[in-house]
Length: 104
Image (cartoon, rainbow, N blue to C red):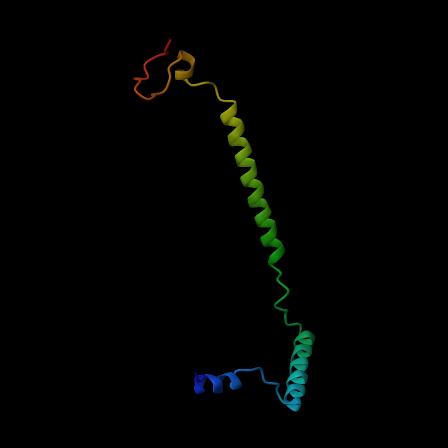
């Protein structure tokens, strides 16, 4: 059984192609020239992000605030006095019970 002739043509065409050496050299020299001009002109590099330290400091502050609020809420819940139901021995509703008092 023969293969599809269109697929055979596409297999031959679908491959990496080396640019001509002259084009590659001119492109490289042009890019180096542009980068040097930006460096000399003081254009900020996309890798330099002056806001990044402030953002990381804000994230750390937010995380610290979350931890402190969790610790405080756990401490307040653990140190709260027992509820009136617990003091009087009243159980919450259970299966089939009315929840009106202690069972003996």
